[in-house]
Image (cartoon, rainbow, N blue to C red; front, side, top):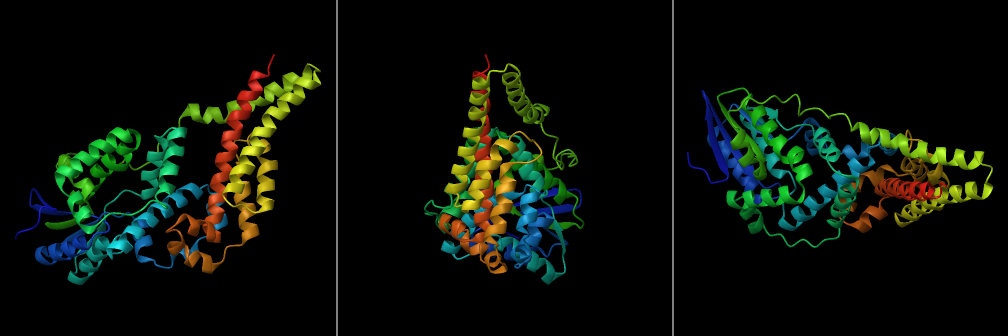
Length: 387
């Protein structure tokens, strides 16, 4: 059997693995996946999906089940917004090229059912991947990443089908991976390297003698490098506990500010005490309210952010974004119709603002960031006022 350079054949013992490197928005990839499975007639078809991504792919009505209050209370707002923004970028490119993002994975699933092959989901849980990546990134780099994600909503799309096919070339992929490692070394390991290991290990354990695996072309070089190695997926399948220093810092800042207030109060110098209060309250209130307003929050939400930020910033167990988000959700009352339009509205920044569900998410994130920035400014200002 002859295959294109996008298909890598690996053998171990009595098993033969056919790894199809794809672009997630390529017509050529969809056709090639179908062709390879038809030719090979594998015992097992492996796809680069975890259970949650698989459900998102096959459950077209998932947005109807979205509970915005639960998302906010569980602190998953930023995670959901990042998913929406990245998915929107892919869908916008896919619409231009006439293919649905993930169509090659759907084709693999359909073909597996058609020929009676076993289907295996071989990717690590997306939530673990993103949490491990997020833990590796500094606060300022996180802000940069958030900006880059949402810049994709307004950036022009000049990618053609030929460009996608060229990107699957191994020489090009190696250069892209090197540049990615230079630009974002902190997240390359959890986002790419660990998943290369996880994918190839899972595929090697798949049942049957003939296996077809459908994965993004960017993972193929790393999978080949790890092929045949003994890989323990346990350590890379969990989210490590957060830094003790970061956890302590959440309590240190409130403790320092409260200690400064106590010092000013006990010294009976009311002018110093008032200055400290102003130094803490003004940055907190102004930054939280300003970013909430920019995100398009309702007047009541802006007021709650203004009043709540100086208080919630002293309590590590609750943040202003949660309060503002819940108030915004209560005021805006997103409907099922709003949920059904999410996949269409997130194609643009205007759509994000127009849709009630995504507006609530925007407000929640904006209030959180505004309050965090205000707390840093306020704490620094208060410390400078200590005699």
